[in-house]
Length: 176
Image (cartoon, rainbow, N blue to C red):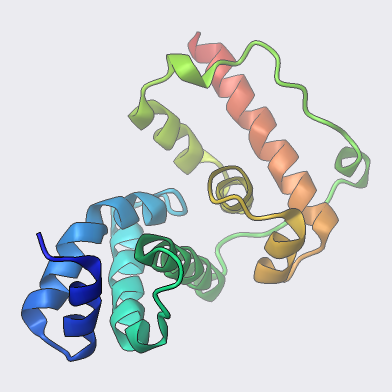
């Protein structure tokens, strides 16, 4: 297996063989990242392709201080968000009384679910809920970062997360 440093170096030189190797190494995992943001495989595939174009166009700016996988993941998340914004198919709604609520993890158990079942439940969420849920719970962004990325208020981010968790909890409890 080619070292990551050599892979990056040869990709920067535009060597197609190494670009293909990089794509094959990271595409399956990154498709999973993109798929969490969309309801259709086609949209996720579009995000993946657009994301890898950006990876190859911007590989010269990767400083090799952090992990390449983490750098690529961030590009995939941002590409997915940009496609969502571009399509403007999601809306954010604020219920002021809900922004102060706290979610208590009760009996809902994600451990009992198969990965594909959980992924489907996440994909079935409305786009705004799904986007914030993915960014906060899976990708680890703060509400401040999410608000800046999506151009919404922190309270909207919190509200969307709250609603997403409620919907997921209801679905999980129905399935148990």
